[in-house]
Image (cartoon, rainbow, N blue to C red; front, side, top):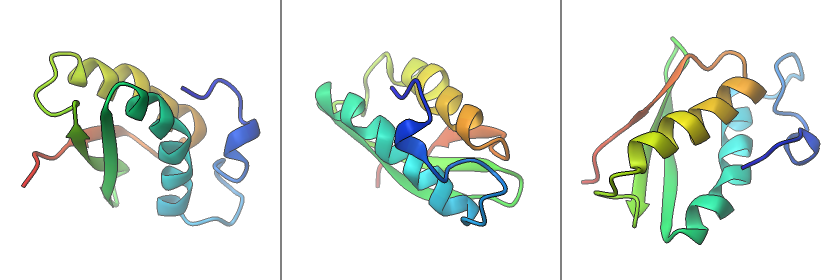
Length: 94
């Protein structure tokens, strides 16, 4: 998980970078940690209310720790680097 903003330049608000792109940058920084456990994540939507909707893939599907990863990993990082984010929701795989 990212611990500094060095890899997330431009993720901060006020940079002129669109919200969805800033969210994607944070997710791209988180992705290697998720992939190292055999999973992956896909950005589906960022709502007008600041809710990020993602789809979990691979080992994340059905994993008992997925909800903890979603809240303590993904959501925490998104809220830290993209203040407009109010929450993260997982959308079930199709």
